[in-house]
Amino acid sequence: MALVICSAASPRTPRNRLDRLAIALSALCLAHCLASAIVLALFASFAGPLLDDRIHEIGLGVAVILGAVALGRGLRRHGRRLPLVVGSVGLVLMALDILLPHGPGEVAATIVGVSLLALGHWLNQRAVRR
Image (cartoon, rainbow, N blue to C red; front, side):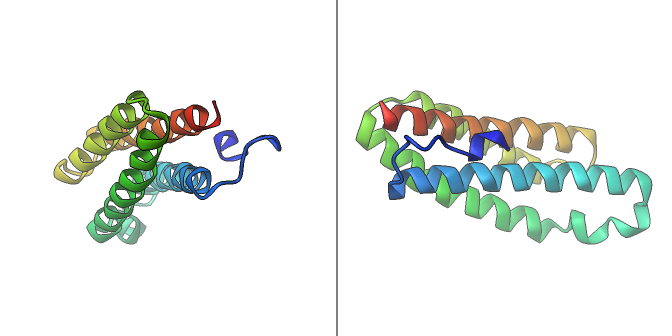
């Protein structure tokens, strides 16, 4: 969550806000994934709403749109491909999550995917500031 907080010296541009929003949503997705796994393990009968496929599909759709806009704008502005590549790999892993059955593999794909997407947005912020 520390990635969401930027120093006072960082510019508050719309591009920067998109990356910060994307990082915050990645953290929310990560918390959802971990909570789902814990609730499923502890209270299998109560985990249904957390594991609803619509939540994953909507979340992936928002992540793809936000990632495309924020990382694409960053690429045009600073010309560095690394944030886009790292974020894209994260999105691919998140999409793979939808194809996997609920379980440890799905949780692992989501955690790694969301973390890489957040890292891509963080790298994008750093590159824009330089």
